[in-house]
Image (tube, rainbow, N blue to C red; front, top):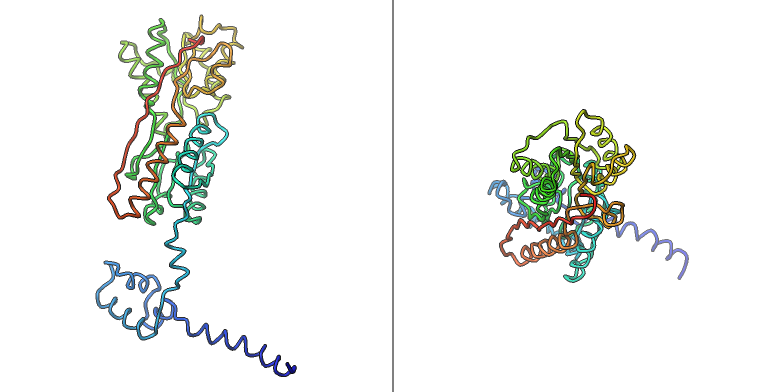
Length: 359
């Protein structure tokens, strides 16, 4: 091919593509011609009820005249099913949540889905970022256990607006009308404190979780229920509120409790991790467990049976929780695809008191 032909060909390509681009009519072109916003044009073409019939007619007429056609690839991407479930969990390296994750993954695999797992690290700010990430990845549904300091779920409403089903588990918020999967925190705590009372304890302290999560409040209610049923009075000096629910908080709060004029003769802790901290403080102060002070945790981590003395704890079925939450979510996704009514569920799983040497 002569050089002049090659030069002409190279010169022709930008010209050709430039003119091809001009033939592609966009929503912006229609909006500019009619003096409307792009959003209004888009909603008019989709027959949104908040757009007037006259505006819809004008938009459709001009769209036909300009031979407007939606981008087929974009439509496909918007409607594409990813077979991916998004998961936001407070802590991944955590005995209870590790079991939940196993249940989620096993059930997801059984139903033909993959899992995109993220961690909020008990931070609402990070939870918001992870939610945006999962939404951008076009997950088919969301499983979430809220962070301890999450006091609003506004950042999750966009999922509902986009038609993405949500199931909350463990730490939940019922205000969105989503399906919920929880353990019976209140009854589990009640059984723990009732056991302490039946073993002769009367000065029972409670190292509880933060005020915001429903789980912490339910466990505190269970503690109060047992105290009230036994005809005892709730002593506010015996209540300590964790901020981060750590072993260090369990140790520090127990040190404070032991300095009271009448130290407690039993302590019920929000988690086993907090109880391990309490156990250290009790031993360091020269008290015996359970002879002087009985101790009970919640979750029944593997470590509960290993520490000395072995820790009495409330077992909560994490694996079953993960399976149930995932099963419900996939059912909601498939019901939505089949244009069937979605049945919201609220599942409460039973807890069990595991009595060991610490009480």
